[in-house]
Amino acid sequence: MQEMNELFCRDPYCREFDAEVVKCTPKGSCYEVVLDDTAFYPEGGGQPGDHGTLNGIAVLDTHRVNGEIVHVTDAVLEAGQKVHGILDWERRFDHMQQHTSEHIVSGLIHQKYGYENIGFHLGPEVITLDFSGPMNEERMKEIEDAANEVIWKNVPVEITFPSEEELKKLEFRSKKELHGTVRIVTIPGADVCACCGTHLARTGEAGVIKLLSLQNRKDGARIEMTAGRRALRDYQTIFRNNRQISHLLSAKPYETASAVSRLIEEQGKQKAVLSALSAAYAESRMGLFESDQKLLLDFEMSMDSNSMRRFAKRLMEEKHCHTAAVFSEDPDAVHYVILSDEVNLRDLSRKLNQKLNGRGGGSAEMIQGALHAGKEEIEQAMKELAG
Image (cartoon, rainbow, N blue to C red):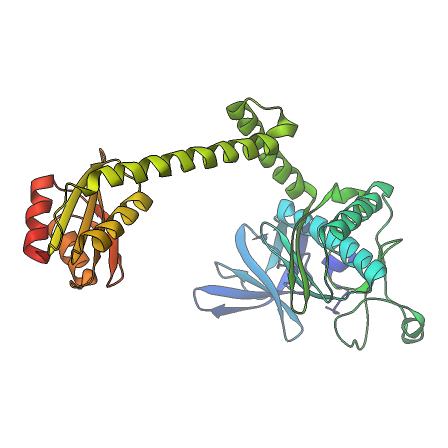
């Protein structure tokens, strides 16, 4: 079987085929099956290998080893056996949508900014692309708009095998130096690239391209993107979530961001009020504690962890105690924050958790967590362990 003349190259839309087993070799708990021809694409160039079945036996992965295409199966097939192969077509077509869309985006970025695509990974959820230069949100939108224009024009995706002389005159993208037969994928107006992957017949089949995220790095930019059915599902999920948010906030769907901003602003104001009340409350409580004690214990109802830390710190500083422990009760547990300049708190945390069915930890100077015990049990344990 000549490389780049396999069935998946000749007809990437072939979903079922018949072939003969050339050999079958055990490999761990699986088998490596080589056929005389195949529609299964082997992992390579950033595109995962195909899945499917051979005579009903699962093909778990497909890759190329020493020029041979190996189908990893979960059961044995005999050399010389005739097999009927069926691709997991939904998965394959998804890979074709993603791969062709990646070419469109990479080609347009190369055209407009001269950047090379230095990394490509077609994952189960998103495509990750690495480029040799920086990007920004404005450029991302520009490329996304241009990429979708290429889809809407529904231009043919052309596969050619130029001669050596033709290749010398052809400008095309390639990550490495090529020898022998070179397969060129051309998307008119967008890209010319050496590629061995499976592609759509026309760009319109990609449906839509969506650039999801941008991360500028030392060596360039990383973009996550999606296309086709994946992009539709992504939009459907975001639409459902946004609709729920709009109902919760009584806001129109296109006004949820400003509604959330207002909510965050209101929460900030409420936190400031609560902080002031907490400080006033702490001030009123300070007179209840004696100074220069080895251990001070304070029990509160539903105090938040930040207020507990602040109050424990004030007890340490103003009452000059060696260990300050603040506890806050809620229906599920008693939460604690403990500060000390004398007791090894890591050791105390471990003992408290064991003795009072708790969880938590921290540093030698401060620990926090939750206990499942009553006030009297906690007071007794603290006096035994830290008093």
